[in-house]
Image (cartoon, rainbow, N blue to C red; front, side, top):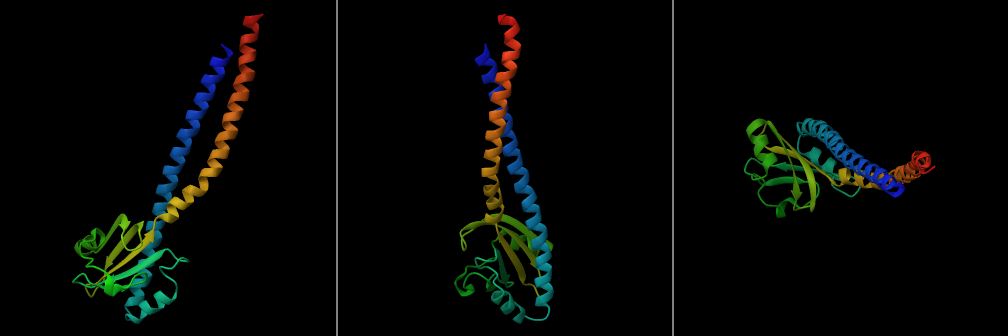
Length: 187
């Protein structure tokens, strides 16, 4: 009888822990994604304003470290015909036509567009935000999603530590309560 009570209390605690961990990860993912989206839209406005002074502004972007390991934002400028005029990570002369990208198509149709997809160029999942410029070109910013998954990865060890503490407490408390409950019956 004691073992059944302890076992059932431990299972309930374990299920609660797993549910809480999954829910925390999902909420963290979507909160991080919203932060990335809002900061990317804001940053695209800064770059858009800089481009109004001329394309020489893009040279400053490349020298500022965009697209390097220290910065996870990638800046791409796409001509009306889909050719890439500038990319802060890859050689634009080697890149294929970008008019088939969903965020580019949406920007051309509605003024701005976004997508989350795997980038073949940088080989990672990214959030892409594109905005149509007055001259018909499209400015696209891509933010690597490794930052979102990285933050969740950093949480996992702490979540597992909390899970172990809660599970241990559940076993100890259920053992103590079981003894209190069963003792009068045994006597």
